[in-house]
Image (cartoon, rainbow, N blue to C red):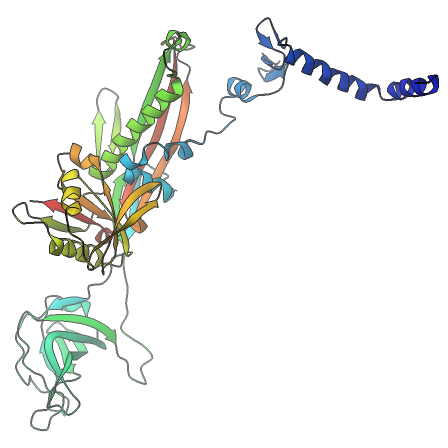
Length: 468
């Protein structure tokens, strides 16, 4: 290298002093790290410390801001992804709690949750009195008759009614048809329903008379039929029904003494492991309360305050199915179970059946056919289900050991996940307690809290399976 080149390099380095110093610093740190000399007096060169400012503020010196320093200086600054953590902890053991978390929750501004649900208007009733073969004619060419049902209020003028198991007639009025008799509601008053026959028989030249209709016949409400000049129709109003549940404050506290934390251990059992076990135990307790809790409010004389207890969804379900202990649980019984679970409500065609080991054992012993088939395993909401398919709908089957613990191994419940709602007054969160500073105990303490409840928005979409 000649002198001209050397002086050019020196001149460039003088003009770029900051860049040269930065490069030299990086090289020295890399050399020291590779030689194991980065640690000096037990402290990393990159670790800073928290100092208190003039107005009690927190400042970081001798290093960058790290998450550890952030927790030390401002414990509430960083958010914990608690919900994402707890949904991964043994979800198969707490299916109700798991599904409610995946389905989302609504914030409750109070520990008392009032909610409304709209039921459907009844669609059928039964006849209370016999109807004679021709009925009472009004004297015109169109006979009418006054009938009485167990629930006249579900019918309005212009409604049509199907009379089950009573044959209608063809257009000639002589030959019976394969279709059931259809009635038309002319009026409704305190005396009953005034109706006309749409496809009745012809008697003595009078069309659309009435065949004999026995008492106890089922009448099914159908669509309304308006005339050409009608611009109005009988009003239809639906009022929601108010229900109430109470949020329960669920808490779990984990503690570890300083000596326990500092002691050498044969296995790596840390505070995080204890926290995971505590979360599982807390969720298992919440699962039992969400299923079988009783909505009550009690006064604690020692604490001088009210304690709220949440109501379980077992008592909220709108339908029941009974399994007889003396009868064999066969395919026909399973078909009846699925029929009742999926009919008589506007629920979805995919529901969840959770039950104790006895009920699951009975279902597992069935020989499935084309009517009911055992499908593949389905993973939903982080849970692995066994699928049962029928002409009525699909059931996702899962064992719940909570039923066994409650002494209800032969019981179960069919749940429609579309109509289960979780209300949360205090979201699931963790808080570190400084018990050392307060002079209580020399421990690291962590408390987990959630105030919540579950409700069934459409009770008839859910069904209890009882054993007797």
